[in-house]
Length: 135
Image 1 (cartoon, rainbow, N blue to C red):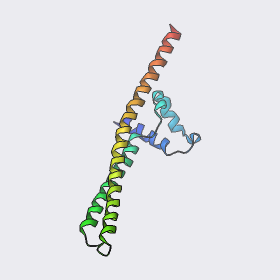
Image 2: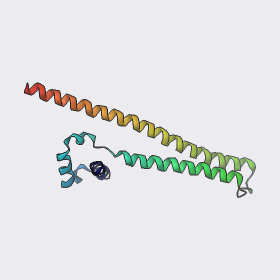
Image 3: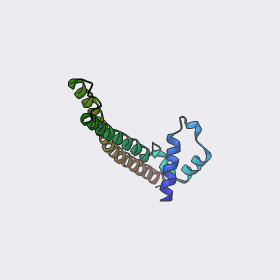
Image 4: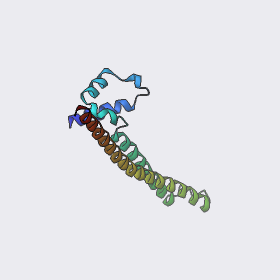
């Protein structure tokens, strides 16, 4: 569990950097001890999940706000057509945010599986090349 946290911390720090020249000695030492993780340097999955949850919750808030607008008398000064149009726009924005978050989450799962398979594939090729060279 601690190793997993250290890994996430290391990847998160790399994610926030704008240039490879900003790599610290601590990061070099970590990847020296875990060379198999170098190929996996991407944004940490938990950061993506945070943004997806934020988008989904914002979408839920928009949908709830549209229902609040529909049943509250705050927009009574507008004509029924404008009121319904505004409520529909707020509702549709919320639904679109929820749909986008769910779609991105599913695509993220598929991408992670693909990256895991690619890392295993690279490792197997490296292993076979080394065994071929030594044997």
